[in-house]
Image 1 (cartoon, rainbow, N blue to C red):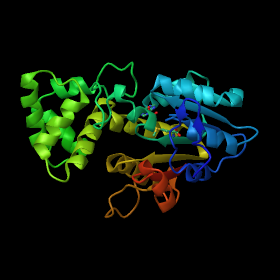
Image 2 (image 1 turned 30 degrees about the horizontal axis):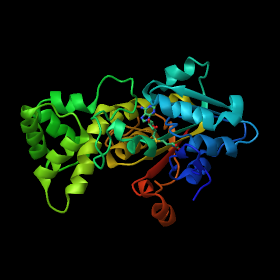
Image 3 (image 1 turned 90 degrees about the horizontal axis):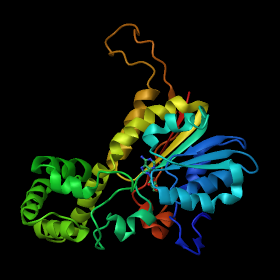
Image 4 (image 1 turned 45 degrees about the vertical axis):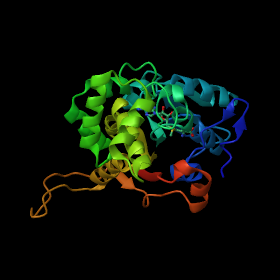
Length: 316
Ligand SMILES: C[S@@+](CC[C@H](N)C(=O)[O-])C[C@H]1O[C@@H](n2cnc3c(N)ncnc32)[C@H](O)[C@@H]1O
């Protein structure tokens, strides 16, 4: 286990996944500027700041105001080496520019939700405890899972469950949600879970529950769109030789990262039957190694590391 997850008086911090691998992959010099665009409890920022002693700065960004405040307290001893900010990484260039920052030596994104968010029933991410159907990482955001579930039409619900949850009973679950809505608005996680349990039944129901909750979370927080917006900005922000490290937890996110990296690492995109190159394109990314997953030891200690996959790119 790494050193970045020790308990504090207010409870334990999110246990950062693949943290040693992330820090090593960044290959930072002591005076680097790094953006941690999914700050969470600050586990990555802490490890990065320590690895760059005595210099080097980290900008920590998170959608979740509470997370930013907690990380600010946790990392206060680093003084002005750590700059916490609240915001969406889909606007990373603009957010950094507002602080006079235009170039980065490194960027890390540890996608999805933190343990603290997911285990808080009041945020409504979980099917194991009852809570309001919010599923918002940014509590100031107006769209909630409740609105999606109660106001979107049946086909759209089925598409969300299929696309973002890869749940094969998507059509039946969407139809059951619409029937449930006729009895009254679906307001809490328990009612959503009951509809899924009634529709799917059998030994795989827990997997279906996880997939349906994941689907509505991804939709509510526009997670895939945000990632799509982040990737090209990352490339613009990095200095040549600068590295970006992405840790993702499901195949949809990983696919976006992989496609982006492979498209940008290809020098020429001319059709293979053209005798000479006419696109004159140069690769702007070097893919560093293969994707990395957590070791058996880490997986045994931290369940959420089991689905993690890290990919690294370097700006050419
Ligand atoms: C897996 S946690 C990161 C944990 C962190 N690495 C740590 O060590 O504590 C993901 C965090 O990313 C944040 N997040 C997700 N999407 C975001 C976005 N589009 N912009 C900014 N933060 C985002 C979530 O609010 C959550 O706090």
